Image 1 (spheres, rainbow, N blue to C red):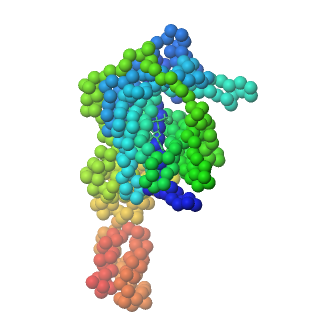
Image 2 (cartoon, rainbow, N blue to C red; image 1 turned 60 degrees about the horizontal axis):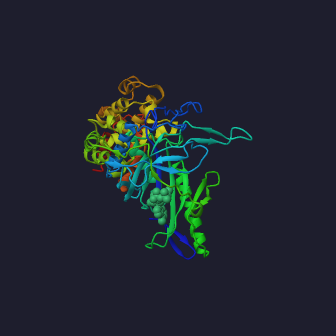
Length: 483
Ligand code: ADP
Ligand code: MG
């Protein structure tokens, strides 16, 4: 928990998030129109999406299954009976004059998401509910000096609104929550989690209180579309509220907007102006009743999820929780690690994958899929370290050669003469030469045995890093009479 220091004492931040996640589906929630991103404006709009009179919505079964699957992934209660309501409001990009959403009877009830924080603490964030709804279109105000345009391609696209309980206490926790939720959705394949394209966005509810007090009045920051912005919006908003209260003011419940340029939030509308949506069950749609057998089948075919994979990595490969946590955050990374680690020294594999490998792809701005080094190549390199063909130091050199030029690690080592020298004769010669050339150091090391490292370094230098470090160590100790 991170507290805010105010002039009158400490304050606790309370955060609850409403995440809108676009369901990965080729067609919309109630029509057969395509959902593909980036199409020409208004090219993916059926009569239903344009709300022509007399058009009837037909529920997309695939989307229902994805919502149930997501509910299962959130360890949530699945409601076999749910209802679609009309949420009435006017907006130029909402041709129906209402949004079809679920209100009193959502398809998914309470669930839970676990967050592994950097300091090793595990936070539980409750899920209040998950409901399905349609997305609206998009108004475009920047296309013409005196006119606005509307693109209805998004109109009717299926969304899941995932509502958390107010269980988060810092911007770090909120960021960790969205990151974890996105990872779960991606593992499930129910949402691509692409925040730049708007597939995942969050309404961020923030309030402050004295530690342990009742919940304070919240403000809701609408439609924040990056994890970094979520953190910034919370920091700004919490401080703003603390300042108001400490100056004797009161927080009014409000909807606010985040401005990424200034990192601030500003009022959009207050509770008094808030809409009365006049929800009522959509008469064009029957209540949605699903069979337990469908839920059971989806549950039986659920892929391995991040928490399960983390536990398995710890158990199967002996990883520490931190490394396991880093690897599972991205499915491609965890698959890559497993391909490298299978049948090999897991310690070496995790060090190489999270160290040199991640370092190289991050530096090059690549991801696992576009990496020039394959899991097979990295695995083969690790085999050469393990069987003593090359030292770890030479391996870094070979790694760079593969990265730049490709090739088989064993062949590279062979053709460039990088093999570790285990031949004792050659090592002995180098050791003796270093001892003979540095009589003063020999005197010093007798009094200060940790000077041995200097000798090892000299011998490694003389052998171009190819001498087996253990053999060098052993020989030096022997020759210098340190044993
Ligand atoms: P609404 O649709 O009016 O925003 P919801 O119940 O759908 O209401 O969502 C409320 C969200 O606000 C939830 O994520 C909840 O956790 C969060 N929340 C509720 N009370 C507070 C509070 N006092 N401080 C911070 N967040 C809160
Ligand atoms: Mg809300």
